[in-house]
Length: 85
Image (cartoon, rainbow, N blue to C red; front, side, top):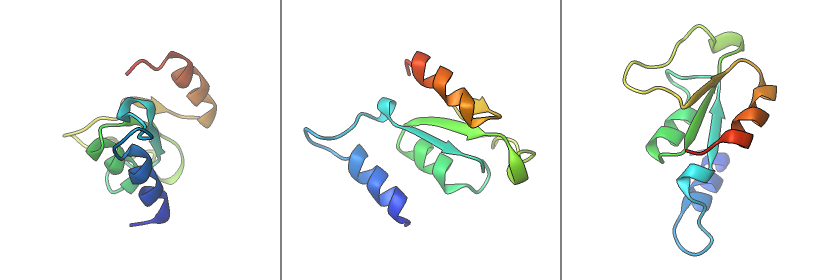
């Protein structure tokens, strides 16, 4: 498990300093075999698919859909301003 997932898992943890899942957003560009979005789905966080670049044509898996799909990182601002999940 990479260090970024260890950090996210610790933040998501338990106790007074834990961050609720609905306040964590995971952005990834790979839906089929990408670990970022799968971590988000497993931990019930907000998932955002950056549909751009090499993996843009993969499409989301049939059993799970990201909460948001964006084509530019600049779209995150509007998501975070109105995120109520």
